[in-house]
Length: 280
Image 1 (cartoon, helix red, strand yellow):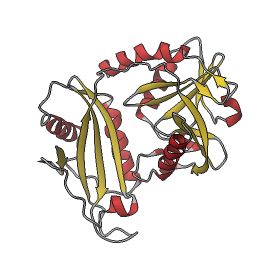
Image 2: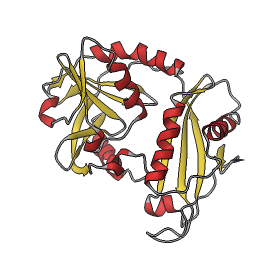
Image 3: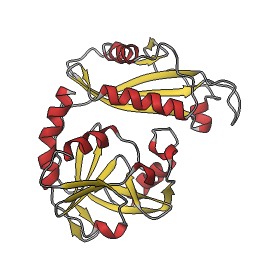
Image 4: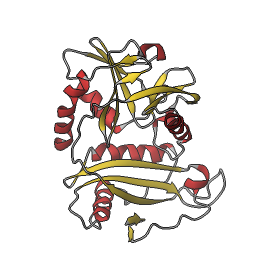
């Protein structure tokens, strides 16, 4: 079941050949975790979606309020007749068909889809998780790299590279050879009592979970936190590195080349993150 412009469809709607998201990557999306009748960090998702649409000069419909879109999400989920109460929800927004590079209109369409999840809260996976740098292509620093568009070809190629070389994930770099993010989330690096994550100006995604983790870290009196560029040379000197995204929460990296990492800060964060998700 999907929600296409407010109408629930039993089967996935066929995408027309000239769909602008398909032809030009002229689309943005939000991926959300819903558990126990609550969209985790919904306000942050909503305002990021609105900001992304404004950056891409899309016309925001008058009815695209927080309440309306939240109701559309739950209307879609209510079509799932199962005992599962935890979902991964994806909302896609694209500019209506027309034009080539220059759109014929800035009006939009949207679709909401979902899949079920087994675990209703955030848990910490501590099994081996090895990463490598993906250096074949890079993320351009700047505003457009911070929003979630459907133009994710670098992430796709990096995922293929990881699969072919038996890595669990890859770290992406920008044109200045600075670490930007992982294939599926933001990264945080811990060295002694200092924790840092790349700034948005380096081209990393303006992640919803990134925002939550930064908020939590600012209350860690035993650590100092900063948003600062991360050089590849810092990776093997780090004590701990972890990836964040809104579905998994926190995913510790256990190995980069010959260096193995601890999970101390990630363990400390996970319970606080669950509390924040419930209260937000």
